[in-house]
Image (cartoon, rainbow, N blue to C red):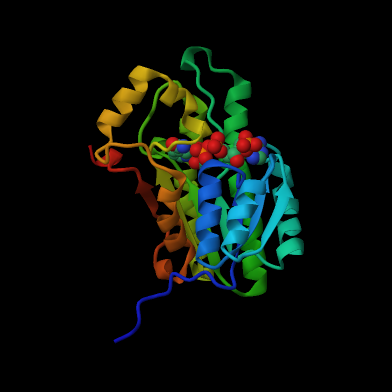
Length: 254
Ligand code: NAP
């Protein structure tokens, strides 16, 4: 009988956007614990993440970027390869949310979320995939989706558009790039304790309503995403293409 596929990321380099905090930090540390070196992309200090990665015995390369500037995506991947030698895994994690009624939603709030959450991830994926194809090897691209890749949400017009869009683009890229040995998948987190949900958790009624609807009965913690990220980044998922994997405490099953 053959051995089960490996979850080890030894010898791999992962580029993680928004690596300074929240889910990006949790994913970067989990990938490092599985053996990967990390290129952490952020516009804020990454010292905490670097500490977690080096504590796992892996290298950490820090790159500054404002990911609203999608035209710099190719340059950013070139800088990552200069610094770490290669990129085997891309985690498109950085994201923003803008909340307002659709009746008065501004173009600025629309463009900001669409750029960071959808346009830049597409061009980062393109640049990383080009480097993989040119090097004649495959790799793993993981987009961070949302419950609003499946549901409409409320007062989150640009966020819902971007997260529904990233689910579609994940499937499209999986179709185009599976033949190159590149797996493109997404993780759809439920409700997690990060800066992204500070406003929700601070609203007593919304917090209560959300908790009552989560079968697991608690908000997720960044470390709760580690297993899914390592799975989708490793050889264990070599035959998994175009899936949007919910890690949501059961939210979607209600
Ligand atoms: P977070 O703590 O607010 O982290 C967002 C990350 O994106 C931060 O590192 C942030 O940098 C970075 N970022 C935003 N705009 C950027 C820009 N223009 N340039 C560079 N970096 C930028 O939120 P999070 O919850 O960890 O979010 C991570 C991902 O998970 C996002 O895609 C989010 O939509 C998704 N998600 C979160 C939840 C949840 O419940 N928390 C649920 C579903 C999906 P700064 O720290 O410098 O702002």
